[in-house]
Every structure is written in C-alpha cells, then in structure tokens.
Image (cartoon, rainbow, N blue to C red; front, top):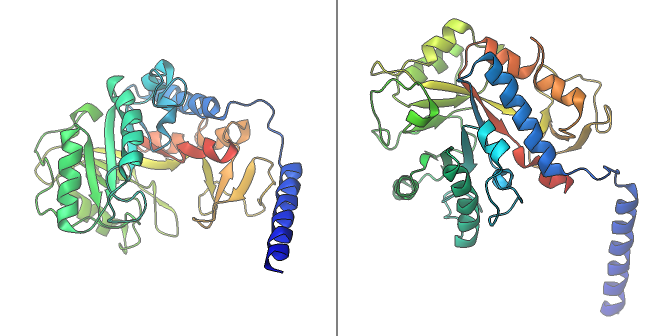
Length: 327
C-alpha cells in the first residue's frame, strides 16, 4: 500500500512540474547574465557621465566578472571596467546561517570569482554575519589576509553599529577620496532603531568608518536626506572624510519605495515577476525591460538620479544575482 501511495505521489509531482513548465513564460534566447551585465554597465556609464568619480559596487552575483560566468573564465573586460568594487556577503561567515563558518567549497568558489575581479583592479568588500567576538576577529583576520576590506555584521538586518571591536579594524584619520583608499566600512541600511534622521546622523558621524553604505530613504515616511545632511554624513569623528554610498536594488522591485504603484501586481505590469518568499514586498523583475530600467535611471525622478543629485558618492547595487531566478 505504501508503495502505491508513493508511486501516486511521484506521478502527481511529475504532472505538476509539467503544468508549471507549460505555464512558464517564454523569454526567447535571452542571455540572462549578459542582460544583467549590460544593465550594470549602462548604470555605470550614465552615473560616471554625471560624476566621473561616482562609485559602482555590485553585491553578490559575481559570476558576471567572469567571461564565461564561472571560476575558470577570464575577466569580462567591459563589466570589470564599469564597476569599482565587488560587495560579497557570507564569504567566511553566514552562508548557511549567522555566526556559522562558511563551508570550504562555497568559500573557495566565491573567492575564485572575487579574485578575478580583484586582478582586474576592483576593490573587494566583504560582509560576514557573525556576532561572537572570536568569530568577528577571525573574519577580519581572514579577509585582511586576502587584502579584502571587511565588515563583521552582528545583525543580519544591518540596523545597528556594532559595539565590537571597540576600535574599528584598520581605523585611520585619512580623508577618503576614492574607493581604493577605503580600509574599513559600515553597512547600515536599516534605520529602524533611530527615531529621527538627526539621531541616525549623530551616531554615524561619531564613528571613523571610511565608507558608509546606507539607504537613500529614512523611516516609513520615505524621508530623503538633504544635501546638507549628506555632507554631515561624510565627516568622520576624527576630522577625516568618508565616502557615503547608497544601497539600491536593481533585480527586484520593492513595494515600499516611492516608485511603486499600488495597482501593480505580479504580471501587471508584465515585467513584475514573483514575490520573493524570503522578503515580503520584494518582487523579481525582468531587469532588461526598458520600463523598469527607466525607473532606475534616466530622469530627475529616477532612483539613481535622485542619489546623484543629493551628492552621494556611489551606489551599492543589490540582487545582481537576479539572473539566477530566470536561468
């Protein structure tokens, strides 16, 4: 009886998979990795035409740095020229769970891709998720040995400034003018612990991080930071200057952003795909679609244009690995 039930369940699963395949959209012969490369390159060219020093940092999805999308490929020249750094999560801690060391196989795979980008002249920024002090120390030590710049995040939500180590790793009083001068960074994109922008700014300018990665908006009201506030955020406590870069998702649409239309739903407009089951309100998008790309850059109301006009130093592009969903 159990064997019969098992066979019936297999047949139902096969039937379900066949139905899913029949319903799957037809994307033609699109090269999804190349479409994302082209998108990032277009963002870079547009931003650098406005400000030649504007920093472009893709997070994750670093198969794109390789010409064949794998660790045995050569550097994709156009893509590596377009970007200034690579942001990678979970290289040594957090890949499987927070405070858990990343497996050797996954670490070696990611490292091989990052080293392609590094050899092409790009800075490597690593965010490890760990909160036990000895593991945070280990993260900084291992990344430093690879000449990677790292941040040991003790909170996956990236909503707080770590109170350890007491002195920032590789702390300095330099005035940072380019990404190549950065020796440490703070990843603080979720301001939920701050009642006001003033509180957020005060906490940041009391630190000596060389680079701040933050969100363009503050709070549920989506308050934008003024030019004056941006200049304040660029000041380190010791008198030096820091770079301030804005997190921006380009592989998913977020229904809490200013551009979202409440009438939108999956399939309407056609480029809005499935909701991310791990992040409510985030929707996969056909990132090659011209309508989506026009939301990201191209006029004063576009996301990137707002960031440039406010005086920020660059963008930290997320969901680069969006090509995996379509592949």
